[in-house]
Length: 270
Image 1: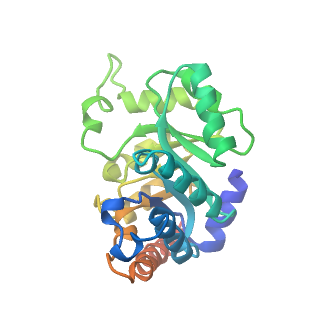
Image 2: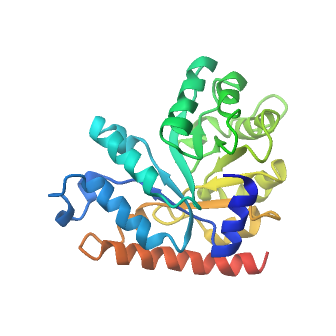
Image 3: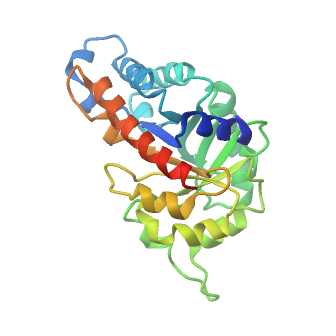
């Protein structure tokens, strides 16, 4: 998916919502558990319910890998089911030496058919560049994540006063264009969002942490938008588990619609 395609979807749906498909077997509605593939059925109904409001879907690989071959099959079917107009993000957080990264890229982009993959930048340029050479595909580099442990390393200053996550953004911008590269910037860092946008004015940010983690959508939107929106705000648990009963899909639809309606207001004011 190209940048123009993504922005067209944002304008059409008046939304920059990404739904995280973190399907946890322990949290699935009980009436699904007797099915041959309860994970896929859950995801299928979530996708059907939220499609009018979402421009992207983000399966977190851990929830599928933990189930072995059956989990990978659920993932494959889920990615194949996601509407073609939506960006598919494989939240894999990979990152290794060049030849290994190239095989990771082939696995997610060619075998599974994802449009984007999250990548850890710790090993540097040669671990990132192999993900860049696939037309219409995106690498999403972890920059300033939403978890509490992000404070352990990401905000350490070097001798010049630069924070580590700032160095990551500055360096990674040299490795790919804004049509190939996004950054993960957590919604729990709304106070820094304006400064982070100044570091990468044209890039899209994948923003987790809205919903169950308490990120402020209004603050993120005000500080983080650029001329093409530049944001994909992810919500997972608040949508997926809005209800644990047979009405789970309707509850998910309601939560997604609320977020979309709020996003539409911020897009109108941009």
